Image 1 (cartoon, rainbow over the protein chains, first blue to last red):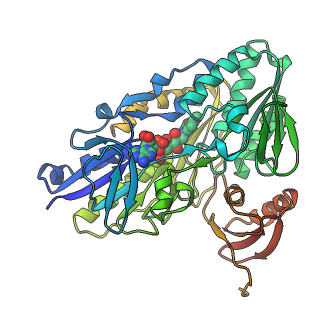
Image 2: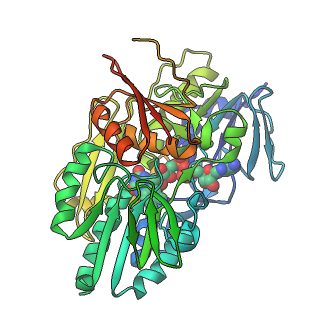
Image 3: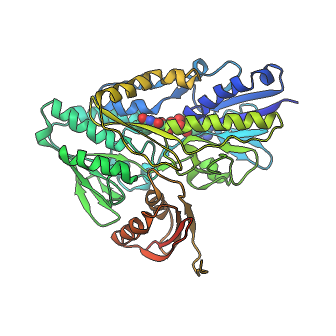
Length: 381
Length: 80
Ligand SMILES: Cc1cc2nc3c(=O)[nH]c(=O)nc-3n(C[C@H](O)[C@H](O)[C@H](O)COP(=O)(O)OP(=O)(O)OC[C@H]3O[C@@H](n4cnc5c(N)ncnc54)[C@H](O)[C@@H]3O)c2cc1C
Protein backbone atom coordinates (compact mmCIF):
# COMPACT_ATOMS: atom_id res chain seq x y z
CA UNK A 1 0.00 0.00 0.00
CA UNK A 2 1.17 3.51 -0.78
CA UNK A 3 1.96 5.69 2.20
CA UNK A 4 0.39 9.12 1.74
CA UNK A 5 2.19 12.29 2.84
CA UNK A 6 0.03 15.39 2.47
CA UNK A 7 1.32 18.97 2.84
CA UNK A 8 -1.26 21.76 3.23
CA UNK A 9 0.09 25.10 1.96
CA UNK A 10 2.46 25.82 -0.93
CA UNK A 11 4.23 28.85 0.55
CA UNK A 12 7.88 28.95 1.59
CA UNK A 13 7.73 26.08 4.07
CA UNK A 14 5.44 23.79 2.08
CA UNK A 15 7.33 24.20 -1.20
CA UNK A 16 10.77 23.75 0.29
CA UNK A 17 9.53 20.66 2.12
CA UNK A 18 7.93 19.20 -1.03
CA UNK A 19 11.20 19.53 -2.94
CA UNK A 20 13.18 18.19 -0.01
CA UNK A 21 10.96 15.08 0.13
CA UNK A 22 11.12 14.59 -3.65
CA UNK A 23 14.86 14.27 -3.30
CA UNK A 24 15.04 12.30 -0.06
CA UNK A 25 12.30 9.85 -1.00
CA UNK A 26 13.03 9.65 -4.72
CA UNK A 27 13.35 5.86 -4.74
CA UNK A 28 10.25 5.25 -2.61
CA UNK A 29 8.13 7.65 -4.69
CA UNK A 30 9.32 6.13 -7.99
CA UNK A 31 8.55 2.63 -6.68
CA UNK A 32 5.02 3.72 -5.71
CA UNK A 33 5.58 3.06 -2.01
CA UNK A 34 5.15 6.69 -1.01
CA UNK A 35 3.19 9.55 -2.52
CA UNK A 36 3.59 13.22 -1.62
CA UNK A 37 0.76 15.68 -2.33
CA UNK A 38 0.91 19.43 -1.90
CA UNK A 39 -2.49 21.14 -1.56
CA UNK A 40 -2.55 24.92 -2.03
CA UNK A 41 -5.48 27.28 -2.34
CA UNK A 42 -4.16 28.89 -5.53
CA UNK A 43 -1.98 28.05 -8.51
CA UNK A 44 0.89 30.33 -7.46
CA UNK A 45 3.56 30.34 -4.87
CA UNK A 46 3.66 33.80 -3.30
CA UNK A 47 6.90 35.24 -1.93
CA UNK A 48 5.79 37.84 0.62
CA UNK A 49 9.11 39.68 1.26
CA UNK A 50 8.66 41.37 -2.14
CA UNK A 51 5.71 43.33 -0.69
CA UNK A 52 8.04 45.54 1.39
CA UNK A 53 9.36 47.08 -1.82
CA UNK A 54 6.02 47.59 -3.62
CA UNK A 55 4.99 50.81 -1.78
CA UNK A 56 8.23 52.46 -2.92
CA UNK A 57 7.63 51.51 -6.55
CA UNK A 58 10.61 49.15 -6.54
CA UNK A 59 8.76 45.89 -7.16
CA UNK A 60 5.50 44.67 -8.68
CA UNK A 61 3.25 41.95 -7.22
CA UNK A 62 4.13 39.64 -10.12
CA UNK A 63 7.76 39.70 -8.93
CA UNK A 64 6.55 37.75 -5.90
CA UNK A 65 4.47 35.13 -7.75
CA UNK A 66 5.43 31.98 -9.65
CA UNK A 67 3.30 28.99 -10.63
CA UNK A 68 3.84 26.25 -8.06
CA UNK A 69 4.17 23.70 -10.84
CA UNK A 70 7.33 25.46 -12.05
CA UNK A 71 8.90 25.43 -8.60
CA UNK A 72 8.00 22.02 -7.29
CA UNK A 73 9.50 18.72 -8.44
CA UNK A 74 7.37 16.60 -10.77
CA UNK A 75 7.40 13.74 -8.27
CA UNK A 76 5.08 15.82 -6.10
CA UNK A 77 1.35 15.83 -6.83
CA UNK A 78 0.02 19.38 -6.72
CA UNK A 79 -3.67 19.92 -6.00
CA UNK A 80 -5.41 23.24 -6.05
CA UNK A 81 -8.07 23.69 -3.39
CA UNK A 82 -8.68 24.97 0.07
CA UNK A 83 -8.63 22.51 2.93
CA UNK A 84 -11.59 23.34 5.15
CA UNK A 85 -11.47 20.57 7.73
CA UNK A 86 -8.91 18.23 9.26
CA UNK A 87 -10.16 15.15 11.10
CA UNK A 88 -7.07 14.04 12.97
CA UNK A 89 -8.80 10.94 14.38
CA UNK A 90 -9.89 9.51 11.03
CA UNK A 91 -6.89 11.14 9.27
CA UNK A 92 -9.21 12.70 6.70
CA UNK A 93 -9.25 16.08 5.00
CA UNK A 94 -12.18 17.99 3.54
CA UNK A 95 -11.41 20.41 0.74
CA UNK A 96 -13.45 23.06 -1.03
CA UNK A 97 -12.73 21.60 -4.47
CA UNK A 98 -13.05 17.97 -3.36
CA UNK A 99 -9.46 17.30 -4.25
CA UNK A 100 -7.96 13.90 -3.58
CA UNK A 101 -6.46 12.39 -1.54
CA UNK A 102 -8.77 12.90 1.36
CA UNK A 103 -6.86 10.45 3.51
CA UNK A 104 -3.35 10.96 4.89
CA UNK A 105 -0.87 8.85 6.76
CA UNK A 106 1.35 11.83 7.54
CA UNK A 107 0.12 15.42 7.47
CA UNK A 108 2.14 18.63 7.41
CA UNK A 109 0.36 21.91 8.11
CA UNK A 110 2.15 24.82 6.39
CA UNK A 111 -0.74 27.24 6.04
CA UNK A 112 1.09 30.41 7.12
CA UNK A 113 -0.41 33.60 8.58
CA UNK A 114 -3.45 35.63 7.62
CA UNK A 115 -4.29 39.22 8.57
CA UNK A 116 -7.16 40.09 10.88
CA UNK A 117 -7.51 43.92 10.80
CA UNK A 118 -11.18 43.54 11.77
CA UNK A 119 -10.04 42.70 15.32
CA UNK A 120 -9.26 46.39 15.84
CA UNK A 121 -12.30 48.62 15.26
CA UNK A 122 -11.70 51.15 12.46
CA UNK A 123 -8.37 49.67 11.38
CA UNK A 124 -9.58 48.14 8.11
CA UNK A 125 -11.10 51.50 7.07
CA UNK A 126 -8.47 53.84 8.52
CA UNK A 127 -5.22 51.96 8.09
CA UNK A 128 -2.92 50.78 5.31
CA UNK A 129 -0.53 47.86 5.25
CA UNK A 130 2.20 46.25 3.18
CA UNK A 131 1.59 42.77 4.61
CA UNK A 132 -0.74 41.79 1.75
CA UNK A 133 -0.50 42.21 -1.98
CA UNK A 134 -3.59 44.43 -2.19
CA UNK A 135 -2.46 46.42 0.86
CA UNK A 136 0.98 47.09 -0.60
CA UNK A 137 -0.53 48.33 -3.87
CA UNK A 138 -3.01 50.65 -2.13
CA UNK A 139 -0.22 51.97 0.09
CA UNK A 140 1.92 52.71 -2.97
CA UNK A 141 -0.80 55.05 -4.26
CA UNK A 142 -0.98 56.81 -0.90
CA UNK A 143 2.77 57.16 -0.45
CA UNK A 144 3.28 58.61 -3.90
CA UNK A 145 0.76 61.34 -3.13
CA UNK A 146 1.98 61.98 0.40
CA UNK A 147 4.04 65.16 0.48
CA UNK A 148 3.40 66.49 3.99
CA UNK A 149 1.91 65.42 7.30
CA UNK A 150 2.25 62.72 9.92
CA UNK A 151 3.01 59.16 8.87
CA UNK A 152 2.49 56.64 11.66
CA UNK A 153 3.74 53.07 11.49
CA UNK A 154 2.03 51.11 14.23
CA UNK A 155 2.88 47.53 15.14
CA UNK A 156 -0.41 46.14 16.40
CA UNK A 157 -0.21 42.40 15.74
CA UNK A 158 1.86 40.29 18.10
CA UNK A 159 3.07 37.88 16.94
CA UNK A 160 3.42 39.12 13.37
CA UNK A 161 5.35 38.08 10.26
CA UNK A 162 8.96 39.15 9.91
CA UNK A 163 9.69 41.08 13.13
CA UNK A 164 12.27 43.15 11.22
CA UNK A 165 9.90 44.49 8.56
CA UNK A 166 8.34 47.34 10.64
CA UNK A 167 11.81 48.76 11.39
CA UNK A 168 12.77 48.32 7.75
CA UNK A 169 9.69 50.20 6.62
CA UNK A 170 10.38 53.31 8.70
CA UNK A 171 14.09 53.33 7.84
CA UNK A 172 13.24 53.03 4.16
CA UNK A 173 10.48 55.68 4.30
CA UNK A 174 12.80 58.13 6.06
CA UNK A 175 15.49 57.66 3.42
CA UNK A 176 13.01 57.69 0.52
CA UNK A 177 11.42 60.99 1.59
CA UNK A 178 14.86 62.51 2.29
CA UNK A 179 16.10 61.60 -1.16
CA UNK A 180 12.98 63.17 -2.65
CA UNK A 181 13.51 66.37 -0.62
CA UNK A 182 10.23 65.95 1.30
CA UNK A 183 11.39 64.79 4.70
CA UNK A 184 11.21 68.22 6.36
CA UNK A 185 7.45 68.34 5.83
CA UNK A 186 6.84 64.77 6.94
CA UNK A 187 6.88 63.59 10.52
CA UNK A 188 7.40 59.86 11.03
CA UNK A 189 6.31 58.02 14.19
CA UNK A 190 6.90 54.35 14.97
CA UNK A 191 4.83 52.69 17.69
CA UNK A 192 5.63 49.36 19.34
CA UNK A 193 3.71 47.23 21.87
CA UNK A 194 6.43 46.91 24.53
CA UNK A 195 8.86 49.24 26.32
CA UNK A 196 11.45 49.35 23.53
CA UNK A 197 11.42 49.57 19.74
CA UNK A 198 11.78 45.84 19.12
CA UNK A 199 10.88 42.71 21.08
CA UNK A 200 14.44 41.56 21.18
CA UNK A 201 16.56 43.75 23.48
CA UNK A 202 19.70 43.42 21.32
CA UNK A 203 17.89 44.51 18.17
CA UNK A 204 16.10 47.29 20.08
CA UNK A 205 19.39 48.66 21.45
CA UNK A 206 20.80 48.70 17.98
CA UNK A 207 17.76 50.28 16.32
CA UNK A 208 16.88 53.02 18.84
CA UNK A 209 19.94 55.26 18.20
CA UNK A 210 19.46 54.86 14.44
CA UNK A 211 15.88 56.06 14.82
CA UNK A 212 16.95 59.02 17.00
CA UNK A 213 19.60 59.99 14.46
CA UNK A 214 17.02 60.03 11.71
CA UNK A 215 14.35 61.92 13.58
CA UNK A 216 11.93 59.02 13.66
CA UNK A 217 9.68 59.51 16.71
CA UNK A 218 9.09 56.44 18.81
CA UNK A 219 6.11 55.60 21.04
CA UNK A 220 6.60 52.47 23.09
CA UNK A 221 4.12 50.58 25.28
CA UNK A 222 1.58 51.35 22.58
CA UNK A 223 -0.96 48.66 21.70
CA UNK A 224 -3.41 50.08 19.19
CA UNK A 225 -6.95 49.26 20.25
CA UNK A 226 -9.14 51.50 18.12
CA UNK A 227 -8.88 53.67 15.02
CA UNK A 228 -11.19 56.57 14.30
CA UNK A 229 -10.94 57.07 10.53
CA UNK A 230 -13.02 60.27 10.74
CA UNK A 231 -10.82 62.16 13.17
CA UNK A 232 -7.74 60.17 12.07
CA UNK A 233 -6.70 59.07 15.53
CA UNK A 234 -5.29 55.84 16.84
CA UNK A 235 -5.91 54.99 20.51
CA UNK A 236 -3.88 52.51 22.53
CA UNK A 237 -4.85 50.03 25.23
CA UNK A 238 -2.49 52.00 27.48
CA UNK A 239 -4.63 55.14 27.06
CA UNK A 240 -2.42 57.24 24.77
CA UNK A 241 -3.65 58.63 21.46
CA UNK A 242 -1.94 59.63 18.21
CA UNK A 243 -3.23 61.77 15.35
CA UNK A 244 -2.17 60.59 11.92
CA UNK A 245 -2.43 61.68 8.31
CA UNK A 246 -1.30 58.33 6.94
CA UNK A 247 -1.58 55.24 9.13
CA UNK A 248 0.38 52.14 8.18
CA UNK A 249 -0.11 49.22 10.52
CA UNK A 250 1.06 45.71 11.06
CA UNK A 251 -2.44 44.32 11.68
CA UNK A 252 -3.28 41.46 14.06
CA UNK A 253 -2.35 38.07 12.62
CA UNK A 254 -4.07 34.69 12.81
CA UNK A 255 -3.49 31.31 11.32
CA UNK A 256 -6.32 29.62 9.39
CA UNK A 257 -9.54 28.79 11.19
CA UNK A 258 -9.70 25.05 10.56
CA UNK A 259 -6.62 24.58 12.77
CA UNK A 260 -8.51 25.68 15.87
CA UNK A 261 -11.57 23.70 14.75
CA UNK A 262 -9.39 20.60 14.44
CA UNK A 263 -8.23 21.14 18.03
CA UNK A 264 -4.63 21.67 16.96
CA UNK A 265 -4.18 25.08 18.64
CA UNK A 266 -5.60 28.57 19.26
CA UNK A 267 -5.95 31.31 16.65
CA UNK A 268 -4.85 28.99 13.88
CA UNK A 269 -1.35 28.40 15.30
CA UNK A 270 -0.58 24.70 15.73
CA UNK A 271 0.88 23.81 19.12
CA UNK A 272 4.02 21.82 18.43
CA UNK A 273 7.05 20.43 20.16
CA UNK A 274 9.61 23.19 19.51
CA UNK A 275 12.30 20.73 18.49
CA UNK A 276 10.51 17.93 16.65
CA UNK A 277 7.72 20.15 15.22
CA UNK A 278 5.19 17.39 15.91
CA UNK A 279 1.69 18.60 16.78
CA UNK A 280 0.96 18.32 20.50
CA UNK A 281 -2.69 17.40 20.04
CA UNK A 282 -2.70 14.82 17.21
CA UNK A 283 -0.66 11.91 15.91
CA UNK A 284 1.22 11.99 12.62
CA UNK A 285 0.76 15.72 12.18
CA UNK A 286 3.62 18.18 11.81
CA UNK A 287 3.43 21.96 11.45
CA UNK A 288 6.07 24.32 10.19
CA UNK A 289 6.68 27.95 9.31
CA UNK A 290 4.26 30.62 10.44
CA UNK A 291 1.56 28.06 11.29
CA UNK A 292 3.69 26.43 14.00
CA UNK A 293 3.70 28.05 17.43
CA UNK A 294 7.39 27.75 18.28
CA UNK A 295 8.07 31.22 19.69
CA UNK A 296 10.63 31.92 16.97
CA UNK A 297 9.87 34.67 14.43
CA UNK A 298 7.35 34.12 11.67
CA UNK A 299 10.00 34.31 8.95
CA UNK A 300 10.76 32.59 5.68
CA UNK A 301 14.19 31.52 6.89
CA UNK A 302 12.54 29.72 9.81
CA UNK A 303 10.09 27.94 7.50
CA UNK A 304 13.03 26.90 5.35
CA UNK A 305 15.11 25.43 8.20
CA UNK A 306 12.06 23.75 9.71
CA UNK A 307 11.24 22.15 6.36
CA UNK A 308 14.62 20.42 6.43
CA UNK A 309 13.90 19.03 9.90
CA UNK A 310 10.44 17.77 8.95
CA UNK A 311 11.78 16.32 5.68
CA UNK A 312 14.39 14.29 7.54
CA UNK A 313 11.93 13.12 10.15
CA UNK A 314 9.31 12.04 7.60
CA UNK A 315 11.92 10.15 5.58
CA UNK A 316 12.97 8.28 8.73
CA UNK A 317 9.37 7.52 9.62
CA UNK A 318 8.36 6.08 6.25
CA UNK A 319 11.47 3.90 6.34
CA UNK A 320 10.51 2.62 9.77
CA UNK A 321 13.52 4.26 11.40
CA UNK A 322 13.54 6.37 14.54
CA UNK A 323 13.30 10.06 13.60
CA UNK A 324 16.08 12.03 15.28
CA UNK A 325 16.30 15.33 13.37
CA UNK A 326 15.46 18.38 15.49
CA UNK A 327 15.02 22.09 14.85
CA UNK A 328 17.37 24.26 16.94
CA UNK A 329 15.55 27.58 16.58
CA UNK A 330 17.84 28.83 13.82
CA UNK A 331 16.69 32.12 12.27
CA UNK A 332 18.41 34.55 9.94
CA UNK A 333 17.06 37.94 8.97
CA UNK A 334 18.29 40.79 6.84
CA UNK A 335 17.19 44.23 8.07
CA UNK A 336 17.07 47.11 5.58
CA UNK A 337 18.28 50.31 7.28
CA UNK A 338 17.58 52.63 4.34
CA UNK A 339 17.20 52.44 0.58
CA UNK A 340 20.80 51.24 0.10
CA UNK A 341 22.12 49.81 3.38
CA UNK A 342 21.14 46.81 5.49
CA UNK A 343 22.11 44.79 8.56
CA UNK A 344 21.92 41.11 9.32
CA UNK A 345 21.11 38.94 12.37
CA UNK A 346 21.40 35.26 13.08
CA UNK A 347 20.26 33.41 16.23
CA UNK A 348 18.74 30.23 17.65
CA UNK A 349 17.11 28.90 20.84
CA UNK A 350 20.43 29.19 22.71
CA UNK A 351 22.21 32.18 21.14
CA UNK A 352 20.70 35.68 21.10
CA UNK A 353 20.79 37.93 18.02
CA UNK A 354 23.42 40.63 17.61
CA UNK A 355 22.91 42.81 14.51
CA UNK A 356 26.04 43.68 12.50
CA UNK A 357 26.82 47.25 11.34
CA UNK A 358 24.71 48.24 8.35
CA UNK A 359 26.44 48.29 4.98
CA UNK A 360 25.68 48.58 1.29
CA UNK A 361 27.11 45.10 0.78
CA UNK A 362 24.49 43.55 3.08
CA UNK A 363 21.75 45.49 1.30
CA UNK A 364 22.85 43.96 -2.00
CA UNK A 365 23.00 40.54 -0.33
CA UNK A 366 19.36 40.93 0.67
CA UNK A 367 18.34 41.89 -2.86
CA UNK A 368 20.42 39.04 -4.26
CA UNK A 369 18.75 36.65 -1.82
CA UNK A 370 15.33 37.85 -2.97
CA UNK A 371 16.34 37.20 -6.58
CA UNK A 372 17.80 33.78 -5.87
CA UNK A 373 14.81 32.87 -3.67
CA UNK A 374 13.25 31.02 -6.57
CA UNK A 375 16.21 28.65 -6.59
CA UNK A 376 15.88 28.21 -2.83
CA UNK A 377 12.20 27.30 -3.12
CA UNK A 378 13.10 24.76 -5.80
CA UNK A 379 15.57 23.20 -3.39
CA UNK A 380 18.56 24.11 -5.55
CA UNK A 381 20.33 26.27 -2.97
CA UNK B 1 7.47 26.10 43.96
CA UNK B 2 4.43 27.04 46.03
CA UNK B 3 0.96 25.96 45.02
CA UNK B 4 -0.92 28.91 43.58
CA UNK B 5 -4.65 29.23 43.81
CA UNK B 6 -5.04 30.81 40.37
CA UNK B 7 -6.80 29.16 37.42
CA UNK B 8 -5.26 30.62 34.27
CA UNK B 9 -7.58 30.87 31.24
CA UNK B 10 -4.56 30.58 29.01
CA UNK B 11 -0.91 29.56 29.18
CA UNK B 12 1.69 31.25 26.99
CA UNK B 13 4.83 29.17 26.75
CA UNK B 14 7.49 31.58 25.55
CA UNK B 15 10.49 29.56 26.70
CA UNK B 16 13.28 29.85 24.14
CA UNK B 17 11.58 32.79 22.41
CA UNK B 18 14.40 35.19 21.60
CA UNK B 19 12.61 37.34 19.08
CA UNK B 20 10.21 39.09 19.24
CA UNK B 21 10.10 37.76 22.77
CA UNK B 22 7.89 36.69 25.68
CA UNK B 23 6.16 40.01 26.39
CA UNK B 24 4.98 40.27 22.76
CA UNK B 25 3.51 36.77 23.06
CA UNK B 26 1.82 37.70 26.34
CA UNK B 27 0.25 40.87 24.90
CA UNK B 28 -1.19 38.87 22.00
CA UNK B 29 -2.81 36.48 24.48
CA UNK B 30 -4.15 39.27 26.71
CA UNK B 31 -5.88 40.83 23.69
CA UNK B 32 -7.69 37.54 23.18
CA UNK B 33 -9.03 36.76 26.64
CA UNK B 34 -11.97 38.31 28.49
CA UNK B 35 -11.61 40.82 31.34
CA UNK B 36 -11.13 38.93 34.59
CA UNK B 37 -9.23 36.10 32.90
CA UNK B 38 -5.70 35.27 33.96
CA UNK B 39 -2.93 34.45 31.51
CA UNK B 40 0.19 32.71 32.74
CA UNK B 41 3.44 33.40 30.91
CA UNK B 42 6.25 30.84 31.03
CA UNK B 43 9.51 32.58 30.21
CA UNK B 44 13.17 31.68 30.62
CA UNK B 45 14.29 35.25 30.11
CA UNK B 46 15.12 37.19 33.30
CA UNK B 47 14.19 40.29 31.39
CA UNK B 48 10.53 39.24 31.65
CA UNK B 49 10.72 39.81 35.43
CA UNK B 50 11.03 43.55 34.79
CA UNK B 51 9.44 43.92 31.33
CA UNK B 52 6.16 42.24 32.19
CA UNK B 53 5.34 44.08 35.47
CA UNK B 54 6.20 47.39 33.77
CA UNK B 55 3.79 46.76 30.90
CA UNK B 56 1.09 45.35 33.18
CA UNK B 57 1.14 48.59 35.12
CA UNK B 58 1.22 50.76 32.02
CA UNK B 59 -1.75 48.93 30.49
CA UNK B 60 -3.70 48.96 33.76
CA UNK B 61 -3.85 45.18 34.12
CA UNK B 62 -3.06 43.29 37.29
CA UNK B 63 -0.02 41.25 38.19
CA UNK B 64 -1.40 38.34 40.20
CA UNK B 65 1.77 36.40 40.96
CA UNK B 66 5.37 35.90 39.92
CA UNK B 67 7.01 32.53 40.51
CA UNK B 68 10.73 32.73 39.89
CA UNK B 69 12.39 29.46 39.00
CA UNK B 70 15.88 28.27 38.06
CA UNK B 71 14.72 26.90 34.77
CA UNK B 72 11.93 29.36 33.94
CA UNK B 73 9.64 31.93 35.53
CA UNK B 74 5.84 31.86 35.70
CA UNK B 75 4.10 35.22 35.61
CA UNK B 76 0.33 35.47 36.18
CA UNK B 77 -1.44 38.47 34.68
CA UNK B 78 -5.10 39.31 35.00
CA UNK B 79 -6.81 41.31 32.26
CA UNK B 80 -8.74 44.14 33.86
C1 LIG C 1 6.19 42.37 4.00
C2 LIG C 1 6.83 41.10 4.46
C3 LIG C 1 8.21 40.99 4.41
C4 LIG C 1 8.84 39.82 4.82
N1 LIG C 1 10.20 39.76 4.75
C5 LIG C 1 10.82 38.64 5.15
C6 LIG C 1 12.24 38.55 5.07
O1 LIG C 1 12.93 39.47 4.62
N2 LIG C 1 12.83 37.41 5.50
C7 LIG C 1 12.10 36.37 5.99
O2 LIG C 1 12.70 35.35 6.37
N3 LIG C 1 10.75 36.42 6.06
C8 LIG C 1 10.10 37.52 5.66
N4 LIG C 1 8.72 37.59 5.73
C9 LIG C 1 7.96 36.48 6.34
C10 LIG C 1 7.73 35.31 5.39
O3 LIG C 1 7.16 35.74 4.19
C11 LIG C 1 6.83 34.27 6.04
O4 LIG C 1 7.27 34.01 7.33
C12 LIG C 1 6.84 32.97 5.24
O5 LIG C 1 6.20 33.17 4.01
C13 LIG C 1 6.20 31.82 6.00
O6 LIG C 1 6.16 30.68 5.20
P1 LIG C 1 5.02 29.61 5.39
O7 LIG C 1 5.32 28.51 4.44
O8 LIG C 1 4.85 29.28 6.81
O9 LIG C 1 3.68 30.36 4.96
P2 LIG C 1 3.30 31.09 3.60
O10 LIG C 1 4.49 31.38 2.80
O11 LIG C 1 2.40 32.21 3.98
O12 LIG C 1 2.44 29.99 2.82
C14 LIG C 1 1.21 29.50 3.25
C15 LIG C 1 0.49 28.92 2.05
O13 LIG C 1 -0.61 28.14 2.48
C16 LIG C 1 -1.74 28.44 1.69
N5 LIG C 1 -2.93 28.08 2.48
C17 LIG C 1 -3.34 28.65 3.65
N6 LIG C 1 -4.44 28.03 4.11
C18 LIG C 1 -4.74 27.04 3.23
C19 LIG C 1 -5.77 26.05 3.19
N7 LIG C 1 -6.72 25.96 4.12
N8 LIG C 1 -5.77 25.18 2.14
C20 LIG C 1 -4.82 25.26 1.18
N9 LIG C 1 -3.82 26.17 1.19
C21 LIG C 1 -3.78 27.05 2.20
C22 LIG C 1 -1.58 29.92 1.41
O14 LIG C 1 -2.33 30.34 0.31
C23 LIG C 1 -0.07 30.00 1.13
O15 LIG C 1 0.22 29.66 -0.21
C24 LIG C 1 8.05 38.73 5.30
C25 LIG C 1 6.67 38.83 5.33
C26 LIG C 1 6.04 40.00 4.92
C27 LIG C 1 4.56 40.08 4.97
